[in-house]
Length: 130
Image 1 (cartoon, rainbow, N blue to C red):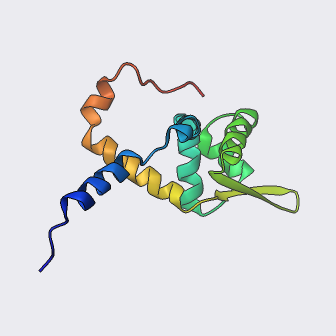
Image 2 (cartoon, rainbow, N blue to C red):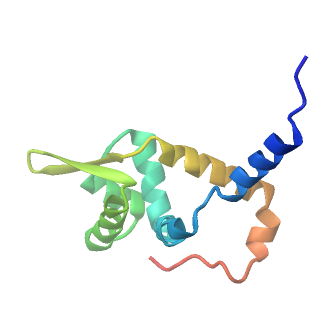
C-alpha cells in the first residue's frame, strides 16, 4: 500500500515544479526555441534525424533552398548545439548533437496535436520567413 505524501512533501513537490525554469535561463530558452521556430530549420532537423546523418548537398535538397540559405540555417542549428558537423575529406556531414532534441520535437508535436485548432488560430505566433 502506497503511503500518502505528507502535506509538507506535497508542497515541496509543487514548489519544485514552479522552479522548473529559473529566471536566468529564460533568455537562453527563448533563443533555443527561436532556433526551432523556423520551418526550414525544423525540416532540416527532421531530415537529419531520419537519415542519421546528412551531407551538405542532401541538406540543401531537404531544405528546398539555395546552398547559401541552407548553410545559414545549418550554422544556426550548429551554433545552438542542436546538430554537430563532421568533415570527411572535403565533405561535411551533419547529425543530431544531443539525443534530447528528437524527444523535444516529439513532445512538441504531441502538444501541437492536442492544440491544433488553437495554434492554427493564433495570430501572434507566425512562422518566420526562411
